[in-house]
Image (cartoon, rainbow, N blue to C red; front, top):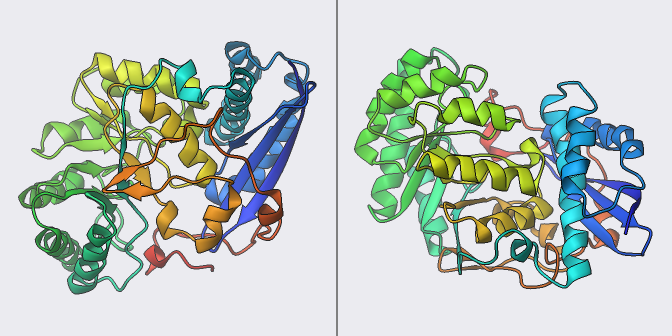
Length: 382
């Protein structure tokens, strides 16, 4: 069974355009994948079509060959743009393989290890940036059944924030902790905002709220900056979503300072590459918390990885806080029950694209969010 064609679909929502692909085979089986990259999703779409001639005719089961042709043989560092395109195609091929064999993807990657997938909520804090409003929104997240959540309390602060801005952020974190109690896991997102010095100063102030992890306090370009922050804090530092190769993860893990690895499957080449990196993390006694602020196909790919990965910890989950029509883009989406996501049992990823619904939501030129502008967390169109 060989790759015959690859089709792409851009879906617009108010704050991010999603990119879905459909890989078609010469035997009639099709698979779906995702290559969303926010502001650059249209650019990734172009990359998919530029890469397509390199693998048309390739046997679908030859994932290692596919990755070598699209990464090594292209002989360029396209970073997240290239890797999102590769991941979209790779995920769709796994979907086809599962369908061909009548098995969910996780059964092809080691089998079912986790019986349920714990989720943490993100995207829930579309409210005024006050301690009272964040606390109220956090209580609603708990009411929905979540036992963990992540949020960015820092507004538009960057590099050397004003003291009042940091004070407000810490007040927000403490208010959320008081609102949800000690048994709910909180993760504090920093979106690569700070210098090492500032990240350490802020991190020490966060320790009283006992966050489960402090995410991306410094930019990912200097891996040793994240390690330096981690060595100075009694709060775990989580990072990894922006990295694009196993070599970068090897450097991140080398000093055993980072044990909460928030890798993004779309940035590293898809399902198999993520599974390999998870094993590297396991060798350093760490856990993975897969990043997933994309669309619903990425969510399904993550769940397939989570189920078969022993050192999986928690799965980021945006879907419930996106547009209500998102659930209609697929023929099946997981439900959240007592803080855990359902595990798909159908072959492949577990769902098909609903192309009629996809076409109702075209690419949006204004569907973008700018992290360092006031009120970015509302995730509105610009």
